[in-house]
Image (cartoon, rainbow, N blue to C red):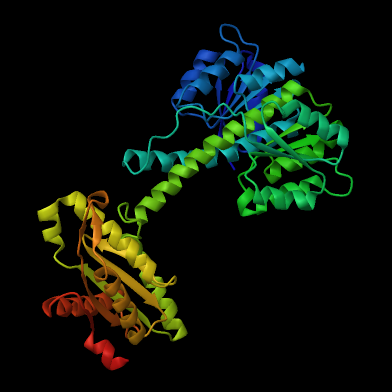
Length: 460
């Protein structure tokens, strides 16, 4: 995938070299020669990823990275720090500043491109989630999008490593901050990762009888682990396999011997990033749910019914099976609101939905159509059965008064119901029109009764 990469370095030859390498791989490149210029470019949203030199006059790369990660508008921007410093303490300092990775000069071209591609994919996913979440927040459907990253501490980590000394060192390094579990069997690790809410899986490339990259690929192909970060443990000679792992969707890697501070910093970075992405997904899912669920009763709403019913009717028609619908209207509901207030009306609506869900079948689609009107769609159901279900619903409402005012009082409630069975090939609108006409007959005949559409009865 393509992306716009910001290259930040005070030495023009370095800028030109990186620009040439990235352009050859079809990335768009923008450049800056100091930290202040880089911050302005990032704040304008003119890049997708930052390659940031550490040693710059005025404001070094560590300070630029800290500023980017503390700004709500740029905290999600991936940052790769580039430097001649090669001490572990320098990498840890960069990771603590919020960097997503740390490349040492002279830069390995294959490693550079692999990291840029991996982080560009991540940025694309985060951007899509942010856009959807921010739209939902703007419309008032969900809460505001998080403007800071979690501290990245706590949570469960799974280590897949059959070297006892190696796994013990990892556990020792992380146990003060994370709940760490070790699994030596890769096949069992896949099941455990799918069944448990791990926030990171650490996979060794040195497994004795199993290809660690195959496990990474399997983790990415399973729905429940698709978004779980993966950190590879490699030896120096595993360079080519590490790059292959990044192409497969691995998030980060560590080269043995493992430094305690570095593994803590890298784990924390991955956990923070995962929690941020999870919060965005949660916002998006909440928005999707609110779009099709009535917030008062918890039933599906009219929008869901209209989009889902077409599919149900087509499926029944293809199978040559019937489908029936009932339209329900609470009797004299306006008097409830007028005499007792809308808060009591809301109590009645919630209680009505609860009773209705108890007596309908699991396969039936129950929706609040609007106000005091509800709809139940019964796939593969003949009119005679639908009438029995409708009578059961009517009896459940009339059988006992509803509690109101928090249980301090009760109020009798009844319902009128119209039922119709679909004629082959008719539209949802035609089916509902006949069920609605049957409802009108039920109400005009005295209410608290079930009436079937005469055309449906004749067809049955």
